[in-house]
Amino acid sequence: MGTGRSLSLMAAVSAYMTNIQFSFFEPYIFDKNLGAGFSLYSYKRIMDTYTYQKEGGSVTLVRPLTEDRTIRARTSYRLENTVVTDIDQSASQYVFAQEGSKITSAVLVGLGRNTINDIMNPSSGSNADISFEVAGGPFGGDNYFYKAFAFYGQYLPAGFWDSTFFLKATAGTVRAYGSKDVPIYEKFFIGGLYNVRGFKYGEAGPRDATGVVIGGLNTLYFNSEWIFPIYKPAGIKGVIFYDAGGAFDENKGFVLKNSMHATAGFGIRWFSPMGPIRLEWGFNLFPQEGDRSNVFDFAIGTQY
Image 1 (tube, rainbow, N blue to C red):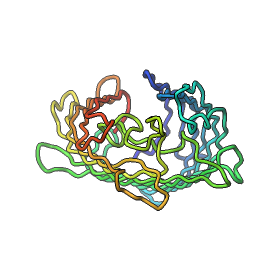
Image 2 (cartoon, helix red, strand yellow; image 1 turned 60 degrees about the vertical axis):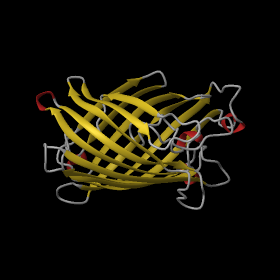
Image 3 (cartoon, rainbow, N blue to C red; image 1 turned 120 degrees about the horizontal axis):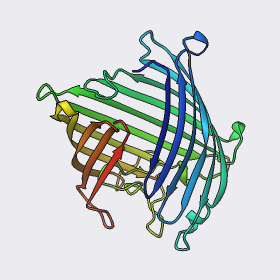
Image 4 (tube, helix red, strand yellow; image 1 turned 90 degrees about the vertical axis):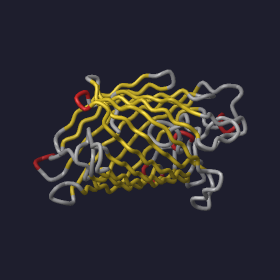
């Protein structure tokens, strides 16, 4: 895990999303064994029947709990304004109820452990994290909810072809309190390059009466990969993957019936001069009515 000061400016633009973020982190604030950082961002996503834009920021404190700094506790505070606009006349009443501007004021506490040997080219080690966030109530704002999220990922040397296996499990839940509803943009939208490949954003989860994805109150998904070199001098790798999971709304815990999806596929990853590039093609193994049979996805300048 890296321990040096970091400064980053990230910008991403696509037909459905714009994202600008500026972040700074100092690992030894005031020469103490305490890290601190902040982030400012503007995030816009265009959905099928509405658009939302988030603008805000967060501050974070990180306390290493071990001498090698692999185990860390953290707390953060985020304040953001989210505006839901451009609602299509065909949208459901649920989507219309989201219209307008709301403030989210939330505090998060978390605990993580990272022993990955190389953040840009991992081949061994693990990364695990658990967090709990509360918005509203004593922290003010318009949105009242609590969210728990956890994941565990493990890299395992395959022992042949200089290749690596990667296994990951992720679970999360969000609930409202104080006679409020969970805002649509705080739900779990599963589908895409970073959770269940072979689905578009949110399509591996609940839809409203009009067929529009609306996110889920719970999520559970698993990822498995075999990563192997294609051309080492250029940093080109191949990947074969299998994903399973989704998002769902059942309130009696993690009820998995009809909520889990299975996909498999392949891709290429390249550490290019512009940064890491991912090109991956996922296939829905058991498509249900209305599902896509396959999805091609890509990302530039992001790590995996």
